Length: 437
Ligand code: XLS
Ligand code: CA
Ligand code: CA
Image (cartoon, rainbow, N blue to C red):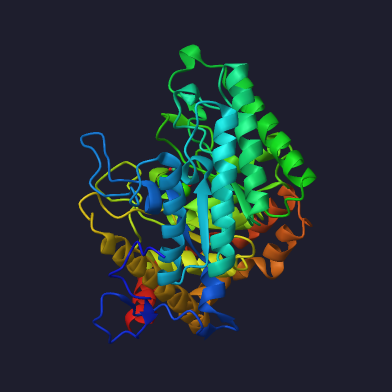
């Protein structure tokens, strides 16, 4: 059997003292933390598009990374790519993967041919999944690359485009079900607009909801028992994306009665593009009962676009894991590295260094988040901060037992209130203490 990464050994946990760049320092898959292995807590997934497909192109230059997998014929290339993906997941000990339909198989001259290509590659994937014991975290359809989708797919002003998108989703969902996928993602792609001078926003959003309803109904009718996700993103490629952030998406779902059918796939870099923290988006999803899955990456503080860099910031991964644990942890979701090695990191080993550092970063985040919880100082502070609502007038407010007039009487009698410190600096130093103490 051809090896695609012959110089890369199987990556093993060697502990924090190891200087071997091809080893895990913190990710020890079988280590048990709070009754669950790290593997089961983190449910790492490989993103097919960045890892197996993206060649490092940007708007100023062509590819820098060879992703031809020793073949020229597109279908042969797709087969080799699939085989290479299992070698990579096996070597990195990653249990799951995620794909768009067009990542795994080339688009044909007709929809029929594209569907045939997909079936052919699904055969190869199915075989690899059995052999290497790998699972599909989620599938999705690419409804943004082809020029037909330049005005959106579900929100296109053209009914023929809407129909084509529906047909593409139908097939992508069938392949997802065939491969036992645990989720199906809607990311907005070009579902948004550039100018209201040509856009009927209300109509476009209602159409998007129609497409989502059809997808859920069809998915359930063919036996899909996984989770449907929406992945919010505020901008790029469109100036205004309809699924701006988790709060916007929740309002959309509730408007169209879809809130029971969808959870969130929260991407770190999309959170920052919406000028939120990653933790904020995770918390909003959790308090709405919609926490599902995560696309783990990071942006760059100096760049305002979707850089999809591998995560290395342990503060961020700790606070993200804290939110994820508090939300009950992953059930069908997981941590998908929607991340790519930089354009100039173009050697095959760079993708391994990238995943190792991302996986170690989240393994550390997991450990530190449990330390934070066990330490209890931060949780206790938050709980104490609301203590006045636990008894007396506060408890009556919460129980709905007081009127405005009662509160006026209370305030008049009570006089000026004590302004209570929020202690942000103290809490930040406690966090450092827990991380590095
Ligand atoms: C793009 C999105 C995309 C989704 C899947 O910014 O992150 O890759 O995860 O369509
Ligand atoms: Ca993503
Ligand atoms: Ca992204």
